[in-house]
Length: 534
Image (cartoon, rainbow, N blue to C red):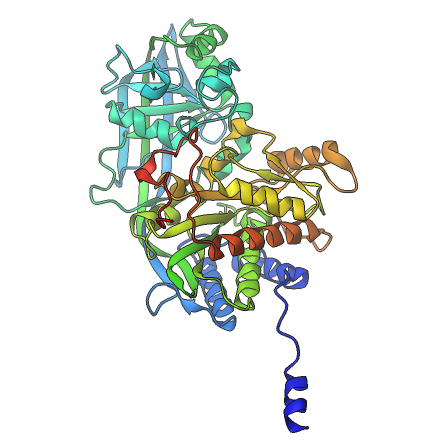
């Protein structure tokens, strides 16, 4: 009788189902004003990191970095205290207004940076891509000059399926790449022309993201190899500069999207200057580990970025509720589910909350250069960024579809939920390159980014698309991204259940997923093979 009573008292094992109430509670906390927008290097970071460590400890997970739950990431914060930009020529001089028509900065860790009377050269999309037989810097010397560059890449501009990847953005469409490539060619200044269609966000996002204190990874040369001046100019200002130079913007932008384009000297001289305040700091990646069984030295990673934009100069808080308090709350729910899984998976599972994603994927970039768990023994990465808050959907979106065999597992898991996996609706926005999974992919680790689709179970796909477009236009990286008790999180619960199924499957198989042969990442570090040897 005593034995029977003891067994009865033990009860069933804890459920591994995703807890909607727990998800909502964690999201509410992380998106609250108390966390001050979760900007790295502020009290908001201290509160966020303490909360995450406490939650991981509560779940019984082990510290991921030796005896610590954190990996310190050295950063530099540069604040432009003053910035001016003007273009002279064509019979007049034009000064662009900071925040309204231009936002410029320097990545060099210096008190001041400038270009003086720098010749302005239009270099189209600013891309050198031998595999696409493309070189926008061919037959032009831009050393000491300022280059003017279009957003995205020529496939988007031409809508020609034979150019790059057609409308779908490639790695070369990233604005970070364009700044880096221009510096490699010796440019003194780099200006990108903003375009809402090409970037997926309006000028308001440029103004909220690239003004105020800017974070970058600490480097041994303090970024001396970067161009002296970098920045964006608005589409209207870009067209005005072309008109000032007596050039046809429409004709030249169309020519830039065709193979054989040659850079064009604009006959204008640029003067620009920034004066900076500099602060060095250390921020934290938060890492927790659930040790596996017989293959515990192989890993599955669940990731999300904990950081947000903090406050603006007026003190307004950017709560970042969807982006990305929701993803971090989802990460905690997945950690809870796996901590209750019996038996535990064969592979170890790590849960990583990255810092400084909003500043250029800096936390994940540091991690892949200084990995806690061998990248070669990392079977795959499942990244969470912006969970769905609009209720259940009949589909799921695979961001950057066509990359790896992980997508086959997603399709199978979605079908078991009665859903269909489909590509994202706006591949031209390059969302795969704008979140932390990209840094793993470029280092050869298959990485997945999936979120709820647009076919709302109650209201259909047109309504779903309108909601996505409305969020990107009015709340993405804006103060309006706030938590609401009215949110329907059951679509997010479905997505987390799908991610649990994909990760559990990946953690119990011997095989490593492979890149598809036509993926941009298929040749990275020889990863397109079965690393387990079976």
